[in-house]
Image 1: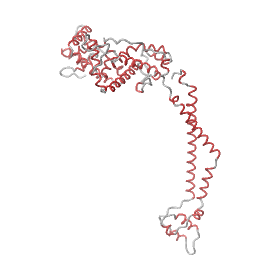
Image 2: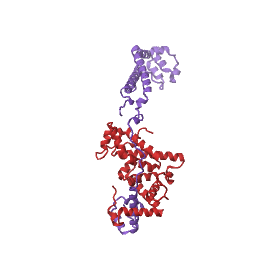
Image 3: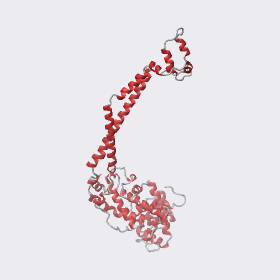
Image 4: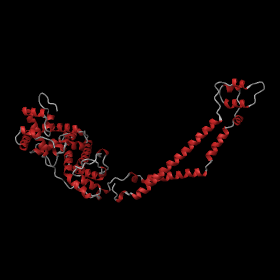
Length: 230
Length: 222
């Protein structure tokens, strides 16, 4: 506490009514009648407050435990048990359907993926199906890849060397997708589908298990209204 | 109204062995309702007195007191504080503040302005009535709620500063500053009436004996 050159403030004196003054304050109070008078007023005030009688108690506030049993907060899983049960049944149904489809059609995804790989693995087959654009279109970089590839596959006319065709190939023609690239893409897709399937099965399993515990087991074992103190 | 105790009222410190209520609290937690009833009997007067002087209404004070003990009972499992008394007082204080805010909203008067117009009380009269008690009660009612709460807990009920800080959830420095401002304001209010000033001086002389240097050695906070 800092001691001003003049008098102690009202707030300082007010606090000193219930605290021991430090040496500086004590010295000032011993010498200054005005501050001492105000300080004594604060002491008298604090003592008068301490001596105030308590208001009479209107009644006894004790209560029997039964009267507040209905007020005990119920657990969240009890309040939402109907929704939890419905959600559990839905999750279990989806899980069964997912597992059933996987068991019933184990090779369906693989066979469709393999078919796509097989179809894309034969450039000659693609070339046979695709239209045959002219060399000008190939130079513009349009749907020239199969056409260019088909040109490469077809036997060169007499007098023309492969290098001629290489020179004629426009620099901006996009690269022809190879068999390896397509198979990698298919494999990635397969892996992703498998991962999604496993994730879905796992999630539905967890939801089902939790739902059975919270929606069916807890309400039976830990019924909130049976006096179990939480 | 009887929902769970707000998170802010939960104490995280372990209860000290020096708490006189620790045995009763432990028994109450274990399901001994008689132990909790004993705790209620110990502190119902204190909680009611603080609630009444905060609200200046007997019916509201009864509701707040009962609500505080019911909430304490329902949330006893989560009590980890150092003082059961401070904990239940904190619940009561918060409930009383909620009531004051509700009253202020219904009267379209800001909460800070509510105590400027002290409520007439059936038990205590206005300042014109004789008696230092009546004058003090009226002066207390004229304080803002935050200052009134500190004075009630520290000066009227004699709680130590650190427990007052725990009840009101404010720092110790804030307790002292509010207490200083409240006492200053009370002194000004009582000084305004010559009769109460004389009564105050008389009560001070009777309480301390001779005024003067003897007071320098005796004034300490519990």
